[in-house]
Length: 110
Image 1: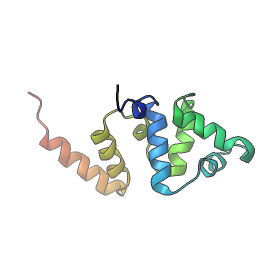
Image 2 (image 1 turned 60 degrees about the horizontal axis):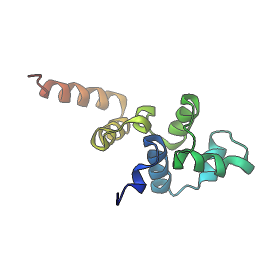
Image 3 (image 1 turned 90 degrees about the horizontal axis):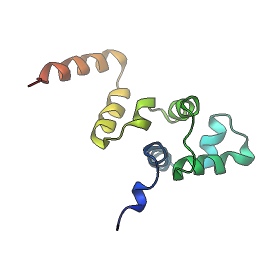
Image 4 (image 1 turned 30 degrees about the horizontal axis):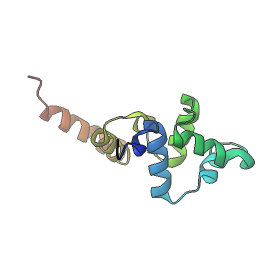
């Protein structure tokens, strides 16, 4: 199918790559930031981005922290919900709590 290449990677790999590119970071920079040896960091991050390997949760947590996003963002399959998670994460804790309460108050279960 046409256009399926972008979906062949894992959701975690896709999110890591998108964030890395948005930040203007190299694969090596992410790897070194989470404690991977400089000589192998690019290859390791590349494997995660391509979906060849899935990072273990502790490694994904380190990547998320280094890039300033919540761990749940890396695993969220819905792009709209992922965007919401990222936006909420970037708020201060009080403002985030208020926005979550407000949003939940507007939702109704039918």
